[in-house]
Image (tube, rainbow, N blue to C red; front, side, top):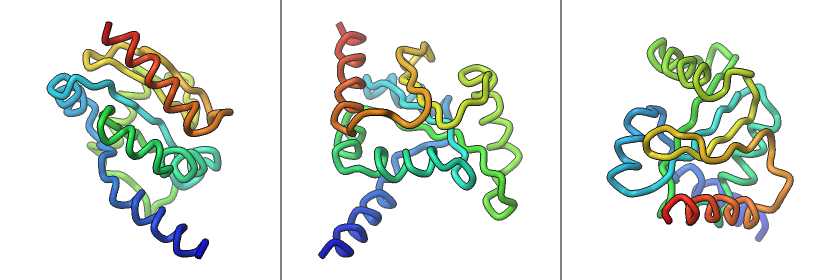
Amino acid sequence: MKVLFLILGSILFQSNSNWGKNFEEAKVLATQKHQLILLNFSGSDWCGPCIRLKREVFGNEVFIHFADDNLVLVNADFPRSKKNELSKEQTKQNENLADRYNPKGRFPFTLLVSPDGKVLKTFDGFPNESVDEFVDEIKSVRNAYSH
């Protein structure tokens, strides 16, 4: 039974294709939908806490349901393995995002950003809280921003 839930959870996460790669497109979409942007810097194939964050938080049903209706998601990935290499265009885009939003090169590093690009909150590293608490933090920032 546990295996079935793990398989379903992984399928759910894989089907959650809401993680975009283009921040400029995300800003337009966030403006249209009146939502905030969650920008995540990750090292998907080398950073243990990044892999854990994707699996345990971003892959959690509570987060997925909240994000689907409330956030525009963007992942700026910095893989190291040749087999996971990004296009030159995507690499440049991610490097430009890092220059602006993650100049210290922290991984994982997650930011809650307004549609106009203003940083509203940062999450440095793997959250030391439950997924529910993580989502509640995002909700409180969103609620304060929308008033």
